[in-house]
Length: 338
Image (cartoon, rainbow, N blue to C red):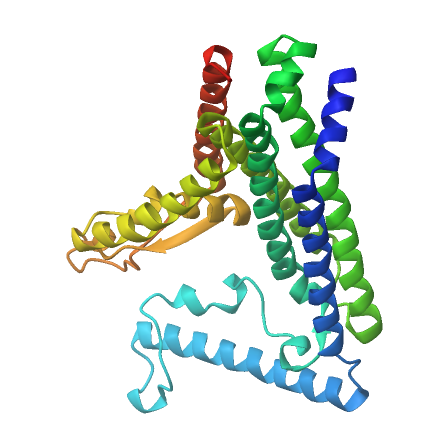
């Protein structure tokens, strides 16, 4: 317990961690201030006009769907066709859409919490992932580079216990900070929606969906923190984690993707870590690959899309993070620290 308390004090005293917390608060304040300045409470005329436009948009969607069905049955005169009609009418079926047009869609300059909460939450998660990765890398990297770990081992000469205490303290601190930041962040925008915008439809489905994304985001933040910690431990320096992240993004996410497109590889997106991150956060990610329909021979509809679901995506993230963390512990156990 004394070791964990000592590590918590060391982590909170680091200037880089304090700077990252300040930047986190500053980013939140700027986002909230910008949202508040660009929003206003709609008056009765604006709401009436928006409801009429939303109703017209829903009627247009239903008309297009009925035209598509009539064309498929051969009962639609060519002169009645307006705009694009897909080969698969289910694509424009209003019942199968994620959401139908609502009044808030036609209220420019009005913040709607129900509509904007999810994009804002994605922004929060992205910032917390970056925060966790950088803090995790600097926390152990600086101690290894400066000799702080050696001094700590003189007091508690158990390498794996010391490293586990550092990792546990890091993950616990990041989790608590992420929970507090999330609560303050979402509460701020909820207040903005109530006072200077529209709250929107905040039913049980909305909160369940938002909570699911938030929970998956917290898992991703902890994985990023552990990943930065593990890479910095393997490289004995904070820059090792930063260099590895930059090298991966340039060499594989950009260069590797380009090579895979040149050689016409099948489903190249499933080989990218960013694709699995997106699939985990959203529950499912869809990608286009023309080779998916290569053997279709024109029989039946084929959209050329394939999906990555959250289960395999989480497995990839866990294997990557767990493997590097295990390697970091194995190397730290035997390596010369001086």
